Amino acid sequence: PAREQLNGSSHALALQYQHRLGRRLQAFTTLSAGTTNRAFGNFAIPAFGDTSQIGVPVAELFDTRMYYGQLNAGLAWRASARLTLGGSATAFVTKRQSMNLYNGQGFGADLNATYRISSRTAITGGYQYMHFRFPRAFSESAIHGVSIGLQRRISRSFSADGHIGIYRANISGTESVVLNPEIAAILGRPTGPVVFERTSWAPNYSGTLSWLQERGRAFLSVDSGVVPGNGIYLTTSRSSFRGGYSYSGLRRTALGVSGGYSKNSS
Image (cartoon, rainbow, N blue to C red; front, side, top):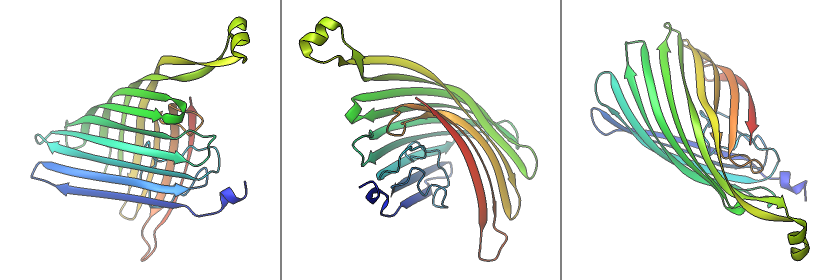
C-alpha cells in the first residue's frame, strides 16, 4: 500500500490574466491549481512563477496524494501620477488524501497603496486579512497584518524592493489534556479534549534584489509570513530564502537554476 501511494503523476496549472478597464483602472486574476503525491511536488517547473502563494503546498512532510487550488482577483487604480491604490480577494483549498493529515481552506483580502517619490523610488503600505479553517481539527485562525515598504531602482540593471510589518493571529481549536484523576476514573480515560483560544504575533517581511540584463535575470529574496501549514502544523509561521538565475539568449531554449531554504514553526 505504501508503494502504491507513490504511483501516479503530478500536474500543475498557473493562469494570469490582466485587463485594462479604463485609463486608470486595471483588473487582474491569477489561478494556481494542481495535484501531486510528492512532498515537494513539481513546484520548480516553469508553470509557477510565484510559489509564495498560501494555497500552494510547498512545505509538505510526507509523500501523499494532495489536491490544491487558489484563486486571486483584484483591482488597481492609478489615482494620480504618483499614487496607486489596489485591493484583492483570495480563496484557497488544500485536500490531502491521507486521513492522518488535516485539510485546509480559507479566504482573505488585502488593501495596498504605492506612492512614487521619484522616478526611481516609491514607498508602499498595506493591510492584509486571512482566515484559515481546518475542519477535521475543529480549528480556525483569523490573521490581521500591516506593513510598510520601499521600492528602489538602484541602477539600470539593479533594483530592490521590500517591506516590513507584523501579523496578529487569533487561533481557536481543540487540544487533548490530562484529566484530573477523579474525572478520568468516571470517564474511563486519562485524557480529554478542551477548547482553546490563543493570540500569536509573527513577523511580516520580505526583500528582493534583482539584476536584469537583456537576456538574463538573477535574483535573491527573503521573506517571512503566516501560512496554513502542512497537514501536521496548522497555522504556521514560515520564513524562506531563495535565489536563482535565468537565461533566454538561446534561439529556442531558455535555461534557469534556482534554490531555496525554508523554515516552518507552528
